[in-house]
Length: 143
Ligand SMILES: C[S@@+](CC[C@H](N)C(=O)[O-])C[C@H]1O[C@@H](n2cnc3c(N)ncnc32)[C@H](O)[C@@H]1O
Image (cartoon, rainbow, N blue to C red):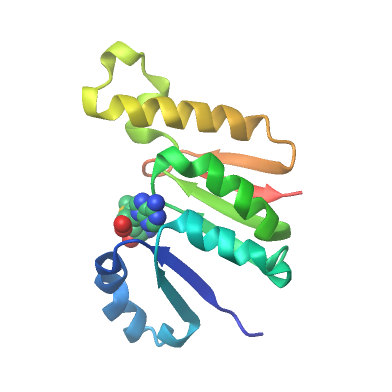
């Protein structure tokens, strides 16, 4: 079965950092890297109706402020039974800390992450699992 990865990052350096490993694994030809803002690309993908309901998996590790916007687009791109994984959903553990114990630089991300976690917990289009691994990942299966 043909598998292809669409990789989006506004900074090409991030992709190139991993490129030697990708080449060593012999999978470069499977990856379509697009240097852009993620929302722009997701909206373009949605314009082609063939893309809707066609993706098996999405991994999101970009700007936390937009996680909910990514979720609404990815929901439409994903197959039923497909998976989205969101990274950093514990935000250095601060989601479980009182605000006053949180370092100043982590406060905006903490609020966005708490709000996003609440939103996901109430989203009945998905079955979710919060995994306390690293900085926390949330696995969402489209129902
Ligand atoms: C924490 S890094 C993760 C990189 C990659 N997932 C990894 O694990 O190696 C976050 C990346 O998101 C990218 N990024 C941030 N905001 C973005 C946006 N709005 N659209 C596309 N990429 C974005 C940054 O350029 C950065 O490379």
